[in-house]
Image (cartoon, rainbow, N blue to C red):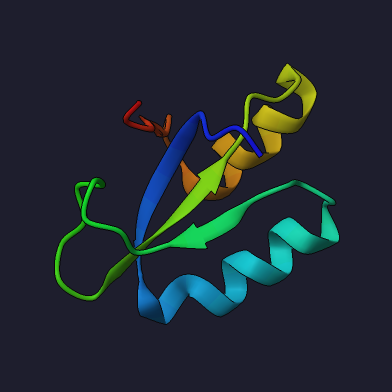
Length: 71
């Protein structure tokens, strides 16, 4: 998967978000790597480029635009 954007989230929200994204059949991976701007206790939901119809669901779920994944 080519990584395009990500959302940093606290560990406490991972279960809910993973279930929601899986039920919507939206591709994602969960990462905790040094190249991402994450605070202590956060992980990143990472997404590929996607059609605007799918992105609308992601945007509504997270409530904001994602951060660009570093090259």
